[in-house]
Length: 107
Length: 118
Image (cartoon, rainbow over all chains, first blue to last red):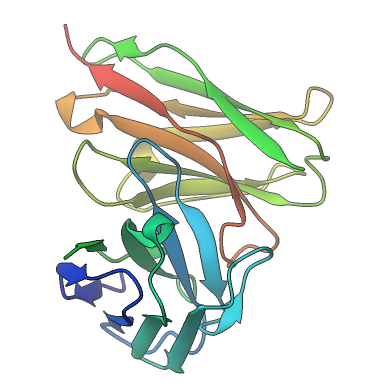
């Protein structure tokens, strides 16, 4: 099973600032990597798939990069609605596995 | 707009079988793949398994011996059964859609909390 790790566990950011979240896979997942946003009491929402493709309706200030084992999610200018938990997920191997999440909170 | 809704008992006794159904509205259950994912309170996400609209399945090896999934295309529903549950199975259970066997999960249900307790 591929183990996904994320850093940092918590990121404190002021509105309007840039946030960069990292995700690492224990072995190569090619570009089969997705990012999800989850707010309290809500289901996760797909943000990015294929490591860098924004899902339908996702704001342009979200971007993904990376391939192989190292990936980033960048939020270029944090809006109030962007404070949430972010999970990465690999879907290159079964079972698909998720990272433990990064909480982005208000500084 | 595709919507998914989980339903089933919120409380299951230890050693019994957890049964959940996901109803798909706003779109057809075919030709997609449908997953179950769970999230213990305050913890991360775990893939349970998936089922193709035609009935093929793939389960997480860690749960395989206890999981059964089925699909009813006439009702636009698919289901999860998890047998011999323990407190460790207490979680929010989500259903979700994906376009191929190994793909991102593009639509999710709101989730349903299942507590295992006597």
